[in-house]
Length: 120
Image (cartoon, rainbow, N blue to C red):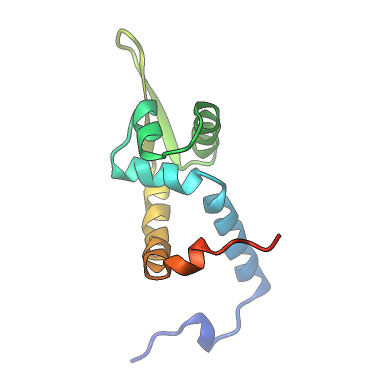
């Protein structure tokens, strides 16, 4: 019994478009790393900032808001003194990270490809 791969069949325009939209959503700068940090246990803003090195506070705030709007992260306000705000991946966000893990594994096997400069 063999499984069908994309090499075994023709990919439709709809599938190609869906694939591209998914990559663009997940591939927005810092979004994947933020989701990965959430799955790894980050909940508070400072924890996300610690996991995602190099991101500014402004951009982290923007991305967390975007990911919340897109349904990948939930934002919870805990009425403590001072107020705590927790960001947790939704099931869809955690599933997206699980789907992207093979990409990280591929990157670990091919670091020289990732280190090449783009020819823009």
